[in-house]
Image (cartoon, rainbow, N blue to C red; front, side, top):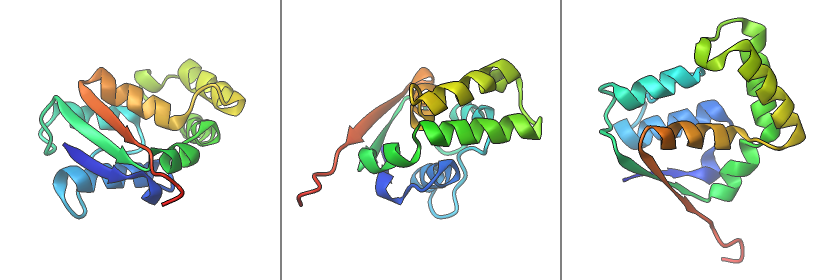
Length: 131
């Protein structure tokens, strides 16, 4: 089981950094800006053997930062760069921008879908704000 602190997640690169450090220690790597690099880490020798459990502490803080707006921004940057692969094709990215702006899909949701589709169990831990 690996644990990341959702309160420390400011954006997608911070999520990947936290995941990399949870799996591989300080400075550890576990994916880059493309979703395919995260998928590669799930299948390669990057420190974690599938299946595994990822617990996200304070998932609400993480969800707030990796929301639909974050998805739209991430997808817009991917589309503008022209540096994307088939799994992040132009149509997929265009749909992600639209869905993100409508708040019908979030960046955290996309990442969780990728992780779960590869056998990662996500445990979301909600922190009680009153404590």
